[in-house]
Image 1 (cartoon, rainbow, N blue to C red):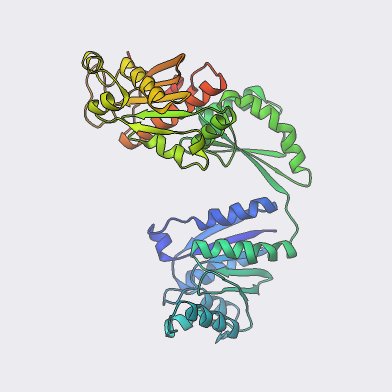
Image 2: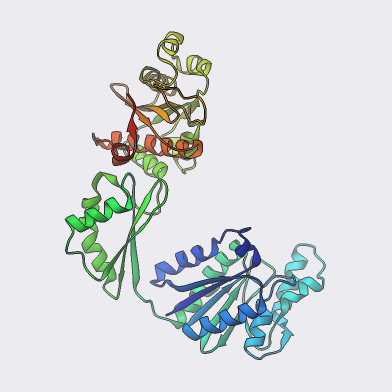
Length: 425
């Protein structure tokens, strides 16, 4: 099946709305063994819409059109489809009944603008929309199945599940495209490619290797096609996981906090955090994971020296002698977190996020991280050359990775620290 996707709307072209719908469509197609062949985005322009619909239908078996079914003058999809198919626009009785029911449920009086959503190409079928006022449109054009859907993400998601995917599965066989997505932390794309080239020189032609650079977790993607795609992926999974080694987090979707919470749960361990320069970002990310309460009793944001002393027991003498951004203070913060949180593992971080506050011996970007258990606390100093927001994001990621490695007994430091972060003196 060659499926094309057309997204419409001036707001998409202007950047007022970020396109998330195409990703949603692709993600829902993937488990069925399909993928989007071509994606096009256009503004609210009748001539341009006609041209793109005509070409995409000529090239494909299915065209999903997303957007342009609303009640306003810039919603053009129904009119353009009517013109292309040489059909008059007419009031569709099922669409009108749906619209009337939708308005009654919400205590609305249907006006002329609302009623426009029931004016569709004559003879078309409708696609049910249980969440919104606009039904979808289904018709054939140039021997291509055209499925027009509203642009509201929640409505599209429901229509994909309830209507579009069941229809496609009835009419088309799977293309048997299967993908294994692995999450990696601490290695870049070029470094991973070099590993594959050097260690797996006999990489099979029937498995496509791809990467998606994102922060902080990088995706390594293996895609196979054909009836034996799953078997091929299974055969190569172990060599790839072995190659990625300690940098492998697991199969996506996952995140550093989800991996950390999962490992803490497996080991029946608890973690308490003491944050200064990250301002609670680590605790926030951990508590975004369901089930975190079982392994995370809490964290302390000790931004000021006074809070470090009163909440974590860091002595004022230590702060005066070494400064807040120092190994001794980071270790004292970790010890305080262990004590206050009655936790098995602690994580403490103190640094200079910038853009001000640095000095010659402690430049902006300097950060001390302390982590571990009461009998095995470690500390590391880094200088990260990032702006404030990126600094906090990367520090939080590195902190969680260090705790993950501690739990797994991995003694080596992440390659990201070794390669990209300058050690402070």
